[in-house]
Image (tube, rainbow over all chains, first blue to last red; front, side, top):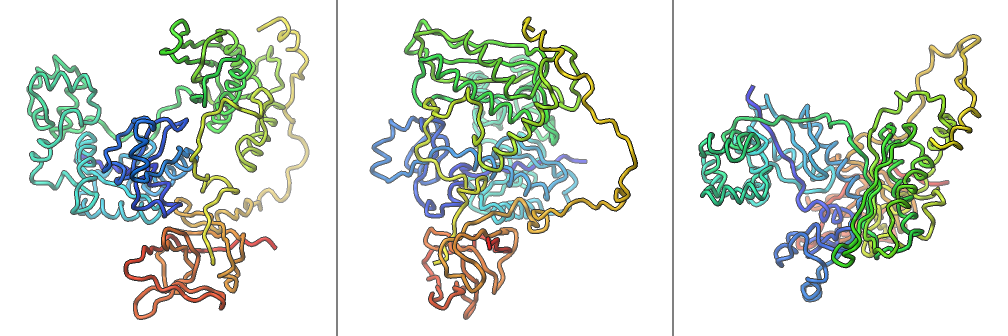
Length: 423
Length: 136
């Protein structure tokens, strides 16, 4: 059966999520900022038209913001995460296998759908996601993932049919490949693109028609696969079952540089508690734990970013255990006089919780621990994140990143629900 | 493991699991699970949103200020539905009617006049209200 893939990608995802719940943001230049309100991470079309690029620090566009009334929003990951889940669930009715590729894009396996008009099908996907979630998406359809991704890029710009491009039914495919630079091909890194350009291969069309032996020699297997994918031979399939988690990471930038061990430990404890929550949600136990502390290397030359690995005596999902070890790691890594800008915790060597082995030397009553963690998670879920906290994570949290322009958690917090006026 | 940890290791009981004994419950075969309100009220989880009401213009429909609305965006709005509409950048809850094939937003409260969206006015149906949750 001829493989067919659709790549469904949300347009300006973060900005679009904000607009669903605050329609007054429609038609205006909007940008969503990174953690700590530092850089632009998502832009509305109106903001793009002003020349605002992704990654630009806010302070560099102050003048633009003032003259054009650009609205700034802090990132609201609770909202984006929930909306992403809704989009992916909505897509499930359109294909037996859906691969969630990132927070705002998914591959759909459409093999065997050849009897229907795929452009119409793409339109239906687009209309349904828009109606169910309020989010605009673009759909690229082709016989390989690489071509579907490429089609999606162009679908975003096409006016007719709006937001859908089916490459399997496009007579002038050569034109489309010629209009795509190698730098814009999915999975082709920057150094690879530069190498190709230096050999006169600048477009997807030129790469498609390149000599396989030359590609194999210079770009290896990865390059060969890309060339074949551009030729319409599918090398990547839809991976609907996500690979088992390798690690659970929680890290954040600080709102300001942190210099005291006490504050650093508070932050590490808070991140560890969050990682523990995620661990239990996935029903996993961790046997290893990394703690890393990052300094601002431009300011403190003598202070390097450092990380430390701790092996836990018994695989655990108990936040108390995890914090105990994470703080040991933090104390060991901390160096007085350094200014830290970020800290993080990664839980590794994960095993399913239902395969826990009983350890005779385990000092913790695992049954009591399990009940305590369940109660903790239930309370925090029902009454809002952080209702019950470990004292090590403190209440002040002065080091927390700034989210000065954050919208409410419209869909995940009873106290912040979206409002409709009956007046 | 530290010395201290090791000394604590033997303080816990070795057997903690309950050993099954006695007769099984005679109701076991008749258990059908518990009633799940979420499942009963929500047909399209991906498309369903909870919305808080402010104002009293829908009071005769049993929608009070502070009530919680269950809104299903997967439903196609039909005449007579209570809907969430976008009007001038704001979400509003009203009953959808049609007069001369044009949409009219009607309040269920005689103190509020109906709203006829103008041609150039930003207007869109956001979702269909399926249930009201009201604290008595």
